[in-house]
Image 1 (cartoon, rainbow, N blue to C red):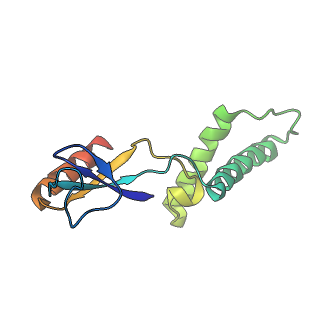
Image 2: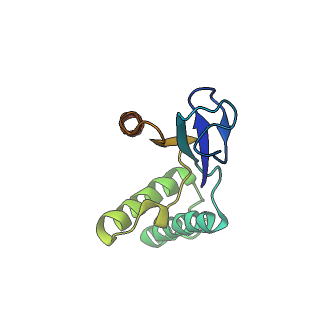
Amino acid sequence: MTKVFKCNNCDQYFKKLFENHCPNCGSENIWIKTEIQEELTPSQVALVDKINNIAYRCMLELLGKTEKELPWDMEWIGELSDDLATHAIRFHGKTEMEVYPYIEENSEKLLCSLTDPDLAYERQKEAENENI
């Protein structure tokens, strides 16, 4: 994930601060944001494939069927994979991203303001409430 900055005065985004000021308008009212990754990394794709394959193999074994008898169907495989991930998190101390990674839907997440910590706290709480 990459940090980017946004000026609340002129709404410009930039990657580097110029002495804690917006390089466009000079404002100090800067917000730090993070860009959420847009696609899974190869290792994350491998984890998703792994849990989906485990779910499918588990159902084949449980039902005593072959791959020809039980076609691959992501509707139930995805649901079973969710359940397996939930159990790994709940009972074995894993995180969701460790067992069944995904892309977050929010494109940006507010972290803090460089000039107004109280406002930053309020904005962060608003962002957290939106994700509930």
